[in-house]
Length: 212
Image (cartoon, rainbow, N blue to C red; front, side, top):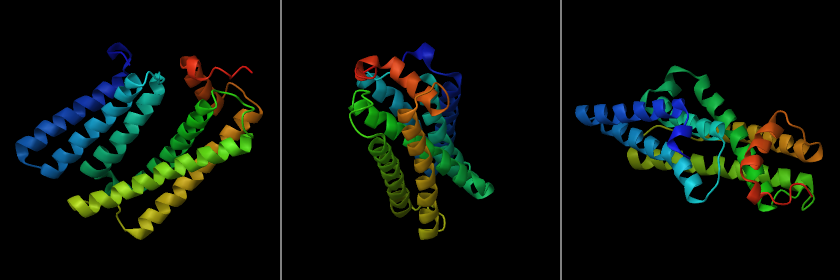
């Protein structure tokens, strides 16, 4: 993604993270320094990944991913939003599950090069659900690893927090899978269909069979 196409919100997030890194280094807040640095790396990764593999990610896609990472790691852990606002974790997990479900659907759809008839819509929807749940499971492993290795408290209440996160993940993934199924059955340029269409239009070479 060219620099001029990077949304202003992304530049603001990167600026805030750089300020946090410098401030944490100056004050010796090593935990905040580590999280801020890791967050900066993760927010840069989607753009770098897209450029590396020649995938054109729509601006609002990349912005949504970066905002989520920033809200989860920096605001959630460094600014302690998880403790200040009980609903912060619920909103993030629900939103991320829906987003991962959308990502899963687009990924599976791309593997079939946009061919709606290559597999039953229900099968594609199920696979997108599995992708979203897999990402959610990997995230829970990441939280556990951070708690065990660095003494953080990302899991909060431990097993209970993990299970509720997975339940919320499953509901969000189910919603996206259902929307994906409806898109395949009755494609329309609204809702999830609009997001899929935007991604397809920017990556036509990867969806060569979409008009068949």
